[in-house]
Image (cartoon, rainbow, N blue to C red; front, side, top):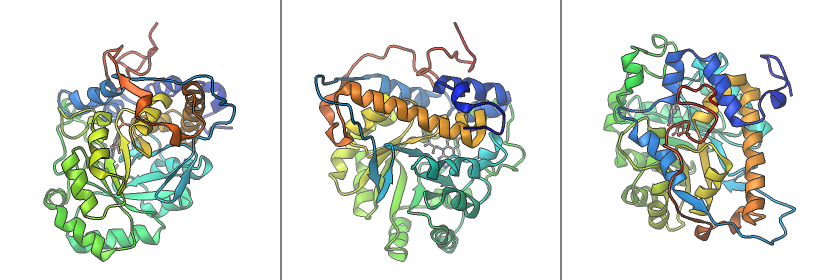
Length: 373
Ligand SMILES: Cc1cc2nc3c(=O)[nH]c(=O)nc-3n(C[C@H](O)[C@H](O)[C@H](O)COP(=O)(O)O)c2cc1C
């Protein structure tokens, strides 16, 4: 497996920790902070990891686990692993090919890529690279006519569903970027530009009802649900999937850790829609904890960005391969051969062992993203 930046990717990256350190080396300080940081005090960001770390696994033993199948079906699409690539804006800051470089990894690893409406190049190129394994993620930047036109465009490209992000009524105060006066390259990466944000602030349940009526056959996913109340409303509005997310700690600060929210959402949804989640997931064990608590699949955000920065498409593919190795071994060690066997009894409350942060799942990496002894 070659990499345009030289070397054999499998040799260069035996662990995800090496992908993260390579990203730190390649990215300048401002872009690293944009990718790695969160909002204000970064409490939500840290809690994503803390909530994962405060769950321990309860493995079963003496079962025949020679053949393990970690695949899963999400919205009618078979995924090799119970995970997908979360929507990420600003990808051209991490790799010149941006969204295309990420999308290309989806068909080679049988996953799904969510394409951000703020990422470049446009959906048409991303969809071609993803070869049908793509879901378009929408930020609302216009009236209903504009939303309709964007949705039609996504459908025309073969998007399997429409993912509407609803946790971004305002662009939060990302203080790392504010302190460095970083604006994402003067708008050339589109992600930090503000034109039309007032439409997102106005967007409400009536607009979801409108979209469901206008596109009855199109599965809708609402991304950014963090309460049982809103999960219930989403189901009443006929969504296909509830996407539990606090935006990786990049929107409202002082929220709950994402996996902490999962049980109340599972109770509220009562099997009437699929449930996916993201926020802090970087390990096979993290992913399996979410599946045990009732999620179908987990979105991978920052780790995708780091892997892309480390080695382009080959880096993202390597990340997915490492996660597969972790998940298969973890399933064997948990005593299960299929994900359907995972349920609540496989997890229990525990004390976290490390101070939580975006990088705390990587014991050899310091807070600055560099190797430590
Ligand atoms: C650099 C970056 C850009 C993002 N851009 C978007 C976006 O355009 N749309 C969106 O819905 N979420 C966006 N998110 C949030 C992710 O989709 C996801 O919710 C979050 O990254 C998950 O947490 P994790 O980074 O800890 O995996 C972005 C996240 C990052 C790190």
